[in-house]
Image (cartoon, rainbow, N blue to C red; front, side, top):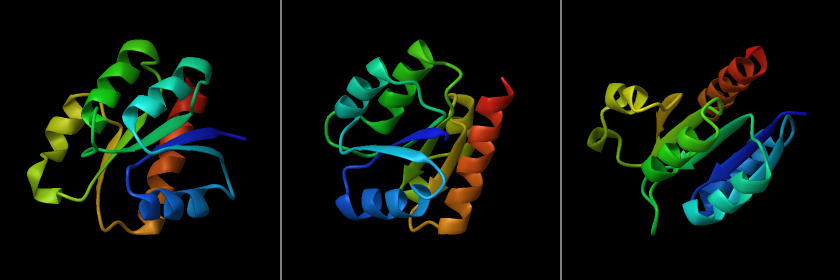
Length: 122
């Protein structure tokens, strides 16, 4: 079963993503990027979903660290500030995809499926 990491400081968002994705995937959750980095040190993930704006390290900083250590792992960025970030610039930085809140759960499932398909094809 593919393994994904969900990183969001909002308990409700983290819970919704876990509920939607845990039927198909082995899911781990983290409330902060620092916690996610601890998971990444001991586990390889098929995909990572992370909020951009979090206390401490941001999702963008997490993206950079994942790229440095596990460059093949797709990172999906999520943000509640849709107009604040340029999706093309985030993709250029190495994000697999960018999804804005409030998101459509079908869209999340589709993006995760594509990310995992990419991981599995490498």
